[in-house]
Length: 503
Image (tube, rainbow, N blue to C red; front, side, top):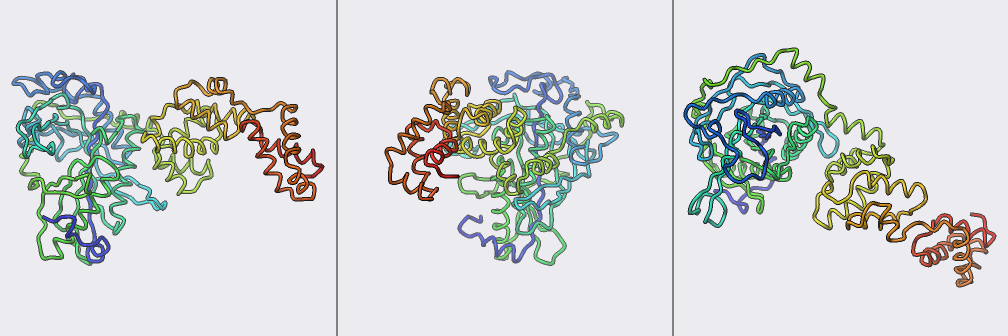
């Protein structure tokens, strides 16, 4: 087995071989009930309490197709620029499933609901790479196995396994790319960008939350290498159930290096499934990969074919939202930010928060400033996702409004945000409780300015002599005296006026 210590370098791998990828992404649909029965899909229920004769595969139980699942599949297909089948049907995919009680999966084989599409994805530097889609088909999820008694949580070394069938039968859409070629050294980056773009698209359609950390979206990374100049694909490996964007990129990179090490030493790549390990960024062998004929597909006899009318398909097409890449390009132009800045916003998970803050009344620059500055810092320090901070876009918009009205300066605004995050109330309540409003009383400011000038005669003389920059020291003294609650620009104006100097 190739280990992390005997990999070839990434640069050497790419010098000799061209990577070919295929990405298979499974998305759990956010339907209220399962794909072929009326059992709830709600998370958090006790094991095996959301089951029925259909999803338990009991004799005589007959499935019925979930219409919302079909609608979601068509929306996904349309958003991926696919053709939508006029007629398609389900099939039985057979092999031993310990966590699928009927021992086959109801899926689609040679007649998917959507096929022959593409998705344009934007890389870090703004380059757009087109990933072609082979198919998107409907199927059902398996149950959940929990292996008990071992050190790793895997079946090897476990004393026994527990099965929860609540997830068995939850609707899935599997989206399969055509072979991705021509990416070269950027292949891992393309893989990550594709899965990220697909996740944003799924969320925009409203058909799933697509939270990878919760298993609602997972990616199988197929990879092979071709010697430079060859035109025949190599033997592929399939790294299963990768559940984060970073891990998709790392898995692709590791497999490129592993394949190159095996091939360069004269070895042969085994067609197999592999497991990805988050701690090391490496993969290990799973099982020899079956071919399609090993699954003994045959048409599902208990389900009628699906034949979406063209009128329905066009109605769904007309209702599609603005797609993520189009939306991002529009916002980037409206906000006047660079591709790099927009990428940073995306990486921080701040895009929708900024949009919502603008919708609540803030200007675009202020919304970006607070979410990408103070709030991003707070999220990083607390290890919290930006959208899980205890502050709403409307509250951030209110802070920007208080700054614009002159009631707060930036320093005070940071304290207000700190108070909101600490659970002290709304921005206005925090301002009131902490006494944070800017000192706008001219009499109080004039008195503070007089005191600063009197206490710093040498600096005052420098300013009178024309060294206006020295006024910063007196402004600092006034700000200290007012606990940072003065308007620094107004303070400077008063100081220069008192000393008879023009700004």
